[in-house]
Length: 91
Image 1 (cartoon, rainbow, N blue to C red):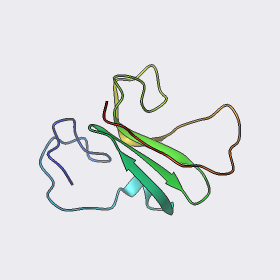
Image 2 (tube, helix red, strand yellow):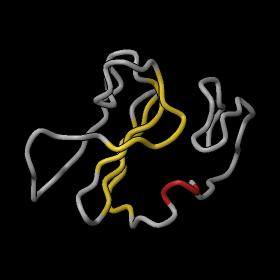
Image 3 (cartoon, rainbow, N blue to C red):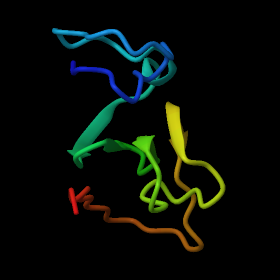
Image 4 (cartoon, helix red, strand yellow):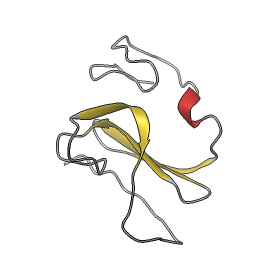
């Protein structure tokens, strides 16, 4: 749901979407947490897998080499974590 100025995950379109919809690339995952920034989103599955999508201008998604990501991309960590809490600040 949103205005789409940066595109939408799984769709690549900049058309407005005015109601929630399923992201096909995450259909097989149970999302237990979601946090949104101004232009990006971070989601955690019940198995502790962290996905990010949206703007990545400041490497918010853990991917230094890309500007933005329209497809939810797994965020890799250097060590394993059992308890995960996420926050995606706007600033």
